Every structure is written in structure tokens, then in C-alpha cells.
Amino acid sequence: MHTNDAHRLYTPHSDIYLFAHDDRERGRLEGQHQVLTHGIGGLLHPPVHFSSGNRILDVGAGTGAWILDLARTLDSAVQLYGTDIEKRLFPRSHPDNVQFVVASTLNLPEAWTNTFKLVHQRLAMASFRVPEWPQAIKEIYRVTAPDGWVQLEEFGIYKAGPATDILRACHNELWVKNDLLPNIHSARMLHGWLTEAGFVDVIAVKHQFQIGDRIGKHGEHFRSVMTETFKGLGHRGTKEGGFAHASQEEYERLVRMFLEEVNKYPGVAFDYWVICARKPSS
Ligand SMILES: C[S@@+](CC[C@H](N)C(=O)[O-])C[C@H]1O[C@@H](n2cnc3c(N)ncnc32)[C@H](O)[C@@H]1O
Image: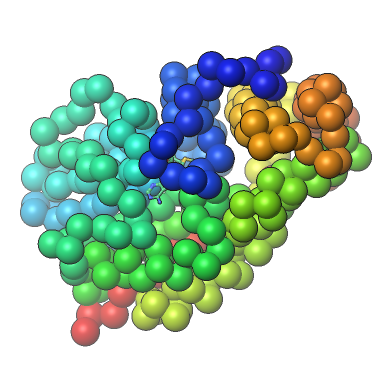
């Protein structure tokens, strides 16, 4: 493991986003997409059906894994869009009814007001400072069509064993330094901001992912995705001057211990929230 790997590529388009935008990150996001979609039992959670001409938007789409998978299940007359501040992870090829647009969720195109029957956002905790979140949700509200739905997905708390507790303290340090929203508050805060923006029928469902060998190949896959996530945060921590809780070597040792702890301790769990809400019809 090379925590201070100088070859990781970070976007110049955000001064806070913590993860890289390179082929290694593409692999991490694609693997994570498989694990999460399996873990929550599918792509789509609000009670919504699509017909010809309907539009769907995935903000902060990354590699586009979610929107491309959804496109495969729908009629080609449905129009799908993915946006991101950085285009480097966008797919090199995609069907004609899927488009990728460079845009910040904090400032989506004016022409998109009241447009999308569904807006999806997954894993944006490292994208916005806490004071920016209400603006992100307001923009999502603005571009959602009347009677349309939003689906947000974020991790909650995670626990495994004592080494994982210290890793979590390192990650919290990065979060606090960058004024990001801590995972522990994600569901409660998102619920509040959705309501403030005008959404109704807000429902937050907590999924709890098991992880590690004892639950078979999905648990093993999830373990390797989380390991890669922690390594990514380690690269960032080192870039920002290291962690108060652990030197670079200690951080690397903690990640190796995390790999053992998820197979060893009972009560290992990763909470994951799916929050859906509707924009009123008028
Ligand atoms: C953790 S990745 C998740 C990608 C995708 N949603 C998924 O679940 O596979 C977060 C993405 O948000 C993007 N991002 C960061 N800040 C953003 C902003 N202000 N507006 C839009 N996208 C942003 C990043 O470039 C990155 O691709």
C-alpha cells in the first residue's frame, strides 16, 4: 500500500472533494456500485414509473454506473442525464438516450427547472461543506418536476473493532478539517434539508450491510471496496499533512487490522441510508 502515492489525480474543480479522479478510483466506484446496489436490493426506491419523454438525473454521477444500469431497465425513449464537477470519470461510451454534463450540484443549469421525474444523488458526503448542503438540496428541488421524486443515498456509522475505531477517528479528523457533514448525522440532516427545501413524503430507510468472509462473496467484495475507500482517504490525509491520531505507517497498519477485524468481531456493521422524498404537484 502506498499511502503517499504521488500518482493519484485530484480534480482542480473542487477545493474540498476528498477522493481522486483516476482509473484506480473508477475501479473503486464501479465495485462500490455493485456492492451497494446488491445491498439495498436494486437501483430504484421511490414509487415511480417512467414513460416516453420522462427525464431522470443523477447528480455527482462519477463513472455513471448507476444511471447506465438504470437506462438498461428502461425504454430508450426515457432521457437520462448524469452530471459531475469533473468529467474524467464519465464513461467513454453510452447509449444515445444518456447524456453526461459537467455541472456542480450547487449550480445546475437554469433551463432544468421542474424537469426531472427522478433526481438521484449517491455518496456526496465528501462533496459539499456543511453550509453548502441546503443549497445543493435546493438545486435538486428546483430541477425536480412537480410530483417527481428524489432518492439520496449515504453511509451512516460503521463499526468493526478497536482498530476500526481509530481509523474512524482519522476520517473524522479529515471531515472536521474540511467542514464536511459527519456520517453519523447524514440521515437526520438530509431529512431536515429536504423538508426545508419543500419536499414532502420524506422517508429514510436504514440498511445495515454485513461485511467480511463469513457472509460469502458479497461480504468479501464489500470488504475489498471499503479497504480501497480507506486507502483513498489515507492518501488524502497524507496529502493534507497526516493524521493527528496516526502516522502514515500506523494508518496503513490500521487498514490491515480493519481487514482482520471484519472477519473476527461480532456486530460488524455499516449503516447505509436511502432517503426518498416527493416534490408536491403545485
Ligand atoms: C463518491 S463519488 C460517487 C459517484 C457516484 N454517485 C457513485 O455513487 O458511484 C462522488 C462524486 O461527486 C462528484 N462531486 C464532487 N463535488 C461535486 C459537486 N459540487 N457537484 C457535482 N458533483 C460533485 C465527484 O467528482 C465524484 O465523482
